[in-house]
Amino acid sequence: MKKIILFLCLLTGTITAQNTNKGKFTVLQWNIWQEGTIIPGGYDAIVNEIVRLKPDFVTFSEVRNYHNTRFCDRIVQSLKEKGETYYSFYSYDSGLLSRHPITDSTTVFPEKNDHGSIYRMTSHIDGHKIAIYTAHLDYLNDAYYNVRGYDGSTWKPIPIPQTVLEVLKVNDASLRDDAIREFIATAKKDIAEGTIVILGGDFNEPSHLDWIRETKDLYDHNGLIIPWTVTLILDNNGFIDTYRTLYPNVLDYPGFTFPADNPLRPVEKLTWTPNADERERIDYVFYYPHKNLELEDAIIFGPKGSIVKSQRLEETSKDLFLKPEGTWPTDHKGLLVTFKLVK
Image 1 (cartoon, rainbow, N blue to C red):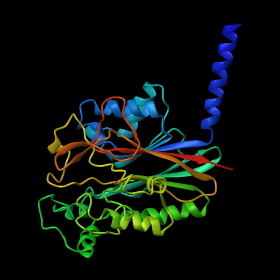
Image 2 (cartoon, rainbow, N blue to C red):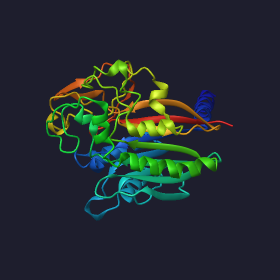
Image 3 (cartoon, rainbow, N blue to C red):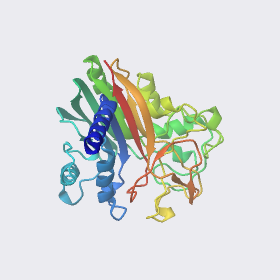
Image 4 (cartoon, rainbow, N blue to C red):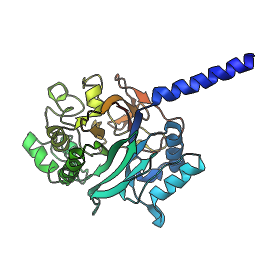
């Protein structure tokens, strides 16, 4: 009798857990640092964390297809060997992974000379069509480094710019804004058809919501308040920054995703500005408002440690961290966002 009761309790618990998760899905934005090749065991760590977290969608940055292989095929096969079914398609620079069958895939902004890329896929969950976009934007003319006294393309020391116009002139010489405008044009077609639209990516650019009056004298912003281009374009077109929406207090929840501390690499290999505080929130998940979609949760995925002026430092902010179970394979922190589908 006790065994029957125990079985019924376990069964009830299983059903409750399934009901609790019904209608929810997760999106993981993750820069995997050259497919995990920089850190010993990095690729296996990527596989193991996906098996553990079971995100519905993964937006990858730094897909390189090393040794004439297709990363998307390798990662799907590796996950299959662990008992997890995922779907993907060929891409380069950025990539997509889905637990749900892919109904369409397109290149929105093709990679050329390492100036970034954007891809799109569609799928369905509970009868809702969802378009997931992945972006890894141009890393050159990275003007938030200029603010800190380093050239944003060569990372050599330079005089610190004195005006916002100087900074934005450098910033907009990149192809980041070009790529995001291509995304907007494509996404508007999805939106017009009633499709749920979500964008994850490493933008290589800070947010205008983070460089405000309250932070102008922090993190080596050197007194500047900057309306960074890419996030402002998204904001002006109605897209919502998941992390900053849930955590609007920039001082308590800076949400830094780069540079992450990684004990398996020397500090000098983890920083671009050895004498400055370069911490930034450059990995994002955005979405467009939809009557059937609610934003539920977001958490930084990765270690609490960061690199500040060539020193390993553990963050003391109120940011919440989902720490890895084993090896951390990258110099970025990821972002795991939970959405809920509603009638």
